[in-house]
Image (tube, rainbow, N blue to C red; front, side, top):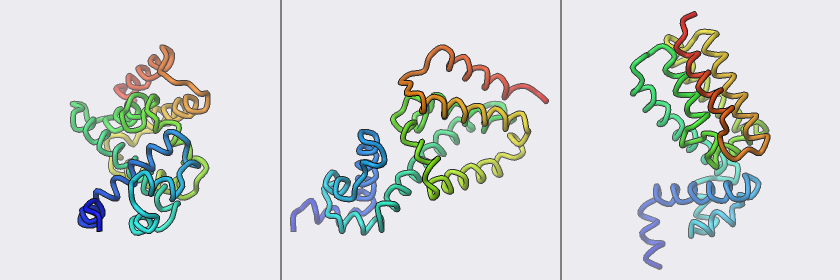
Length: 189
């Protein structure tokens, strides 16, 4: 048995992480449709059986990839909320910043276009909706007003416009929209 296979067998989380990272790289280069079991397994240096040990199907791999993205977004948003001195609107500010400039899925990240698949894939849409519902429930006391809901919807609309028009960088107009939405979160109803 080769040393690399032996050490991988003893480190399943590293193998799982490698599969997710390689699937992400393939998706960023070729879109979600470019993710194949063979391509991901080969890139990660495992057999297709090894991939299926961690993810029971290609769909499960894609769902795992999206869940990993949501975990990154969660961490980014949680850090922003923790650093925000004003509780009212803190989730909405963190969400708007994550959409516009975030490292996990902000406009200029490779994930921005890839996250578009959430619109067409029912299982990913369910993951997104469950994530958002949980976040809104968690932050109801600080971010439950209709005005803050409008700000989040406007950020979603800006994201959709960005990814569907083929833009590759934030322009002055988008920066102004970003600033305006953040300012709206500080207003009292």
